[in-house]
Image 1: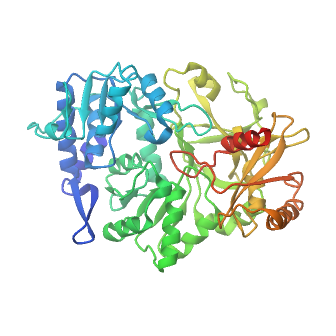
Image 2: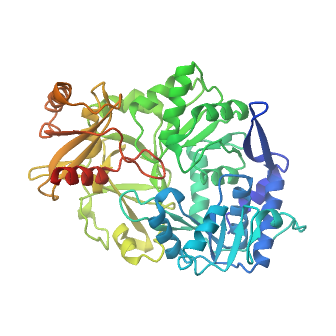
Image 3: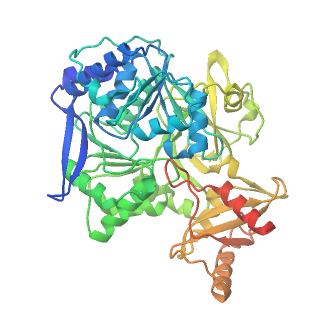
Length: 548
């Protein structure tokens, strides 16, 4: 098995079909020019890169850092690494310099294929990159034994025989963003990639006639493997919350994608822009949003923008994706009112081949699964999953692996998602927040999503965040508010606003004991999707302010 074989199969079946399309804005015409590679061209280019990498000394099992921006070369280089049997290491460059350097050092890479900025970074931190023996740049400036991707393209040989793998051999290392802890390297096998591709294709009934526009670059690898055309949008994928919706809408109108995916932060901006400009998106059948719970309001916005489609929110994590899936159409018809009333966010039925259970909440390591751990329907607990898309281990972190995995019969295991939720009487999974964000007082456990939904009812509230001040077990619950107008109220205006919020909170048993309210002009969010609220950082900021 080799996941790259899917590309070769597509290149033989549809050689002249566009595999990947890249936009470049033309300042003279004020329009986009698009370059592209057909499936045959992409397959050949990846063969050239694989052969050049082999000549440079890379071999099966070598880890190689891949820091290329979304481009035609990104797709070709990734498939080249798969073909050669080299293990690409994907690290989010937006996670902050200290975490970035820590992840690089942990992964002990042999090769570095990167933009020029990373090569300059290497000069300042030679100890972090000390295992790197081979350097390839996407820039024109080279030094030492470094070579450029441009030079690699001159390779004349067009064929390459991919390395064969056992399905459980390592295919890639994907680092988590570290939203509620230290980033960890997730070990992906060729079987996981193959299973994910099949499951995503089945989940959304995708065919080779569908066209993809990925807001998250790695997603394009799945759709290319399916035989779809992948159109790269004009945006910085490391800053999805800062994307220019006008540019994305123009890309959509130019390329007519049927399937678009990425952070809700992207599609919130696109939806607002389209509503302001009176635009609709008739070609899109699927708006797939992941990385954080999607608000009912955002589903409602897209209902008017997608005459031929709807929204979807798959649930999962770097360690396991997809776990479940739900459509915006189903949400608006069946679960939206319950979400608004503080029941949590419904995230749908289990994906094909995936099992989901809810167990008692604990931070302890659970070495073996037993039925006594499982909670009854409608009771909130920790979400665990089992299935072919779940990764077995973290890179060089045996303690973290033990914390996250619960072993079962026949060498199977459950992955602990780190999330809280429940399963209802219809078998639907509901999300209530991260386990690390749960607030425990002397008398009750409070979960972020159900509590925040109540405060979000106020028309002036953009979003809210539950935090627990003090030590778990004796915490004082507080709610932090980000207003729609961005104002930081004071005096009488603030008093009126707080009293309005508290009067709503008193109507619900899970929010009636929340008495402390704080305001924030903007919430700290995660680096990858720019939408997950960093509640632990908010807690630190408030406690620091209270002490000082």
